[in-house]
Length: 93
Image (cartoon, rainbow, N blue to C red; front, side, top):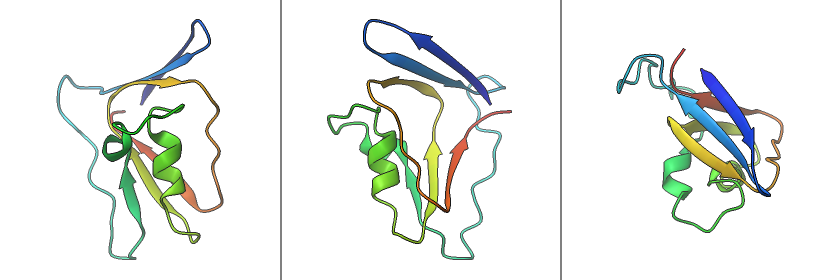
């Protein structure tokens, strides 16, 4: 996964890019163990200081789960707090 962090005027931009142009090369997480999985894209329309990342994390049950972060740029105006048993899954190599 390629990650770039740029500091701007009161914001941080987190860029996640795919290794191959326009294709998602990562297989979907195995859900056989009933792990909760949330996608950041489902929370991007909500006013957010973290581009929907924190909202996706907060929507997971207390037992944890996974947050899928699709390729894109995410403006972070606040830090992201992880809890125990939470995985962040990005796309690409």
